[in-house]
Image (cartoon, rainbow, N blue to C red):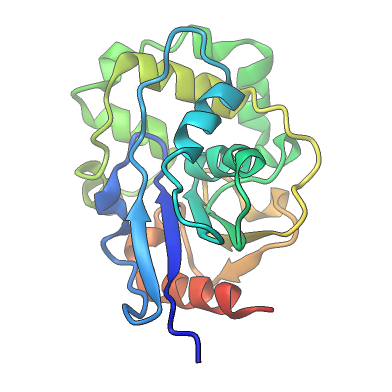
Length: 221
């Protein structure tokens, strides 16, 4: 009997850190969890260059990589530099075509160049900008989890989220998505494993359900 644990690496959402995974609970006898923190991008660093640096943190062979929201986009880019057992994205997109119309318009007019990110670094508007439409209750819940407030990182991440060039889904990627996600509406998303009532922050609000889906996916042959 092989008792070797599966190593799971998590990439958080835009500007979030390890605390965002506090409600994810997986059997400790089967899995070892690792959280990859965001790096500050160098000037004019490409997505591929950044993803390669992030991939260097995945040191275990045959690992599972899980990315959330923008972290899901980066995880898919990291896949090019890794040999994974499974690649899972949560509350994210698989191609540029799954972006909502408002994001496509923002890309077309290069809105990311106009965003005054400095104004968001110390206010609740920062959380609203990252999450999109959200209730006051959920805004308060999520605000404390957005720790990465470096302007270079924010400018880079927002631009690369809007300008991601992926036009064909990666083979074998598993996509967990909430049917009440207002940032990436599920009507634009194809081939997902749905969490009923799941919002864009369902990692916090529906941790047990998301955890079960992750276990199920890893268990698939």
